[in-house]
Amino acid sequence: MNKNKMNNFLLGFSLLATSIFFQTCLAGPYPERPIKVIVGLGPGSSLDTVMRLIGQKLAEQMGQPVVVENRSGAGGNVAAEAVARSAPDGYTLLAVNTGLAIAPSIYKNLSFNPSKDLIAVAQMTRMPHVLVAPVSLPVNNVAEFIALAKTQPGRLNFGSAGIGNADHLAGEVLKSMSGIDIIHIAYRGGPPALADLVNGNLAIVFSGIPGALPLIEAGKLKALAVGTAQRSAVLPNVPSVAETIPGFDVSLWYGMMAPAGTRPEIITLISSALETVLKQPALIASLNKMGADSAASSAAEFQRFVNGEYQRWKKVVQEGNVQLD
Image (cartoon, rainbow, N blue to C red):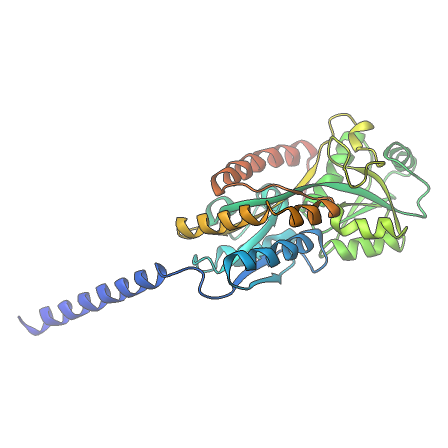
């Protein structure tokens, strides 16, 4: 064997050995170290609150710490892109909400493709939005707010957890279906929007119930309505928006996704662990107390659901002519 052939042989052998080594590493036991779950909204947001609650139980089930990390920005897209670009090894996951399904219709130049670069792990919860207003606003229900807004076109505003977020789109749907002209103001997460609402700097906010409920119970905000077609068990005396605007039905869902290419057995393991956790009576009770319902699902079920949500929100964005601010 001449020198060139020998070099080529050694190079090929080296590449083969390296490939086998990495495949062996990838096929090793999982999990062997802490798992990071990135949340695209700030601390104290409804998604953050729910993920931290579920994360504690998931850590017990998985036998490894589950570390929740906040990376807010661009309606959750900063976090989603970070996970999409992460190694598909099951150690970096993404807590998602309805905003993920909205993003492709709102952001025309995303640097990643949610439907191709992320894969479903499981749905976790679902819950209504609650439409809240400062106690100083002279309205007590949706009909009164619409009447007030129509006397002041373009002067009232509504806040959200970010452009393209589900809170934002809930407000846009309200505008479209009621024919009012109110101005959107985006924040880096729900808590700062709610803080400005308490201070009277906003007229309304659509919020996940976990984030707004303590402020409602403390008398710092008043609940005008919930966004689902039916009333919420945690706010039984608060009407639904649909009782004033028939057909209005906007809700939140939370789930978990992983980078595309993550091994199916890892996805199945995490999905099964989440399903076990989300069936625990104590956790269900804690979620219900916050206004959320357990919604455990398989990865395949959640993927089908998210695919449908992409289409649903594309239609909402197009019909409402929703654009980036």
